[in-house]
Image (cartoon, rainbow, N blue to C red):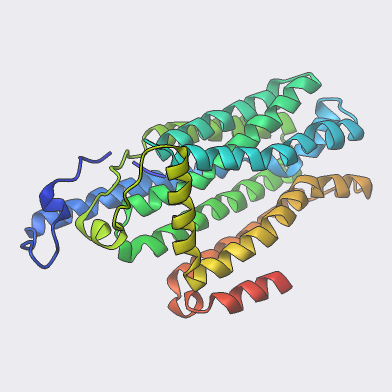
Length: 332
């Protein structure tokens, strides 16, 4: 959701057909600036997901914190499930409001991510672990603002690749963190507490790169303005007007076939994915598997997802058949 950059000038908003081409040095400078901003976004995306402790959270709460299984499932994890939707709705409301600054949303989410890691690592009471579920729900919801930052930085012709790149980096980070956690715990013999220390360090770096994210103007770049700006509707300011604009934007978005199919996929898969990722470690414990390899399991799944995302971002034939992709993924 979006942000460094100077305010748009009349020259910036002029039609490309009427504006003389910029000197080569200026074009190179703008491309270099976009690359630098995307690099900062990629670094934030990587460290925000880098938590080698994630595959062993249940083991840590039961074995190191002394909680019982009933407390973990009915008093801790359930809070994350209940809070996800309100947090996502809150992020959408803030981003869609006047002066909605998605960079601030991401920074706030990074703060919540660091608080989650600290509470989980050092909280010795049930209450601390419950609060950690509230902060992690807010951190997850703030990631909804990441695509808007990518859209704001990249040129329209590069936006699809930039968005797939951000998603692939996040998934690759999950893969790298899970693989590292598996190696450090299973083969090096480090304690779970040390893995959570590494996660705290990763979340601190994510907060650093969140602060370094660019603050974009509402319309940056002539081509972006030319393609994305829609005729303004006359409307009296107020909540009703903002709701009407939001619904109109939603209608325009869903009129695109690819957006409609992927929205259907998200509504169908996200709840299932959220529940599975929340409780799957508990199922491993119930099977009384003493030598689990949770890190290896997560590493394999995240690597496959990262590879598929990167492939879809660079393959026009895959992007051109959303219905086939969505139906295939739902069947799998």
